[in-house]
Image (spheres, rainbow, N blue to C red):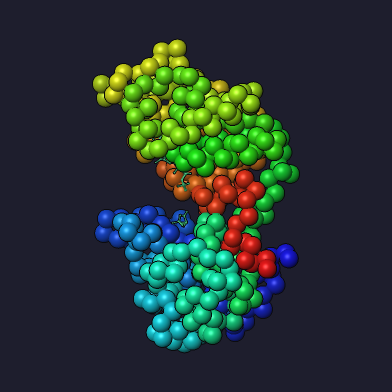
Length: 399
Ligand SMILES: Nc1ncnc2c1ncn2[C@@H]1O[C@H](COP(=O)(O)OP(=O)(O)OP(=O)(O)O)[C@@H](O)[C@H]1O
Ligand SMILES: O=C(O)[C@H](O)COP(=O)(O)O
């Protein structure tokens, strides 16, 4: 069944449960360090409120046990500033207090309910039917008329607030969800040549994406960079030095060297490897070509160098479509930001460009880059969608 959107929803006077993803970096004092994910949902929330909805917002922040596992008070305050409609905060998610806060909403008012993950069931994965019977869903359903899911960035999780409601209430995709599905679900019709950039540090995800898009003939080029590029270099027999080898071992990425080598055997004509690497020597950035490897013992390969940037930029600029995930180096450190900045600039000049990932979006903001056709709100969800996997939250909406 096709997914229903806000165009199919009669909003006026209805009470809506709206799941968004505002999981954000926090400062040490618990303030929001970045509000990009909140900004992304402004259109959906404003539209629902403008059209006379009473909006109960559901969202998570962090994971149990992590430093950024926190309440949503700061998020509510910021949403209240961003929207021209009042957004209050309720420090409960589905208790009698929470249900009262939802029932007391007037048209054009929103309440942000507390972090869904404060409740253990929300951090478990269930089939939709079972998720529909969890306490969160069971207790909120009586005070809601319909459910809107706008949380694309969490759509790869089969958690109650993401998959449980649509079996009990009419379910709709919000505008963020709709746009992400439109763009990422239609990769096959984007212009060629099509170039995938797999950078960053999610080695297993990136290798899975590379394998999938090469096997399905979706990729004309796969450019490897970041830690992923380093793994491919080792897989190709390059000696990137002890520091990078130790890092790759310590992070558990060495297990993927064989997979990378297998891909190189089969698709050497389409997989591109870094031609050089930047290391820190006596406090300075020094670039070594592959012929000059290995770096000294304590010198990690932290960025791609000029030779790689030149070769990759040419491919990127000539691409019909670029799909980019992950930075080319440790962009947070200005000494190693060049590769990411230059490659992203070239990617933005392709005919059609899609970028996804939390750190990727942070790099785009850091370098103040524009010109991308689609900046996905999702990291893991974006990758899952690009490999053609079904996202549980989308499946739940289409039942
Ligand atoms: N050569 C390198 N050595 C060590 N770390 C690196 C290197 N290149 C990139 N990184 C690190 O990789 C991290 C980002 O990788 P990640 O795969 O998480 O990006 P992302 O896909 O944009 O984000 P996410 O999937 O988490 O939303 C950054 O913290 C960056 O410093
Ligand atoms: O930041 C994300 O990728 C989403 O909010 C999902 O968060 P999770 O990986 O903790 O489920």
